[in-house]
Length: 155
Image 1: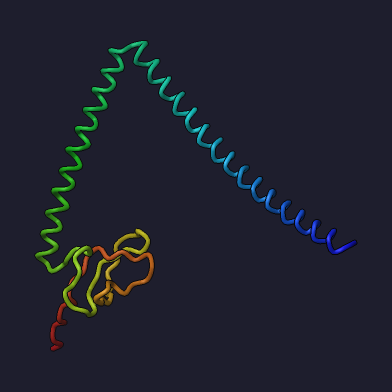
Image 2: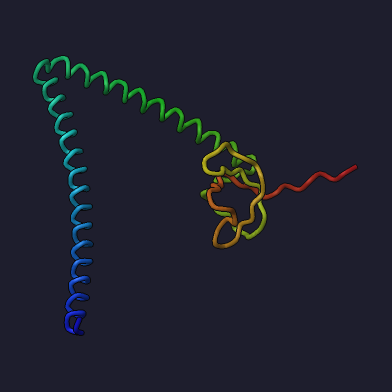
């Protein structure tokens, strides 16, 4: 084989690799487009079903929507009550010295904290706060903090 033939074959191999990569990308784009098309078709079916329900018995659909509205109004009222209770608890906890984790201490140092590790139940422990934030491991969320209280003197 001549050097010219080898060069031509190398260029052909590079072009084949480029075309394979391009084919892979086009295949992936087609897969994503097919997924979107399937989602759209499902949404159209759902909307067609809802339209049929409204057209077949508009009065029943209006009543259903009214009931949904009543349920939503009740849920909003329940959420407002829960919010009021939480605000009262927060106020009480602040009076007891606890501060919300969203409020940062003014000074660096070790603090008593109520924290969660990846959303688990709250745990009481200590954590060190520095100017840039809490020095805790990944996954820890500080819910509340307070200065470590002085221990009573031993008798």
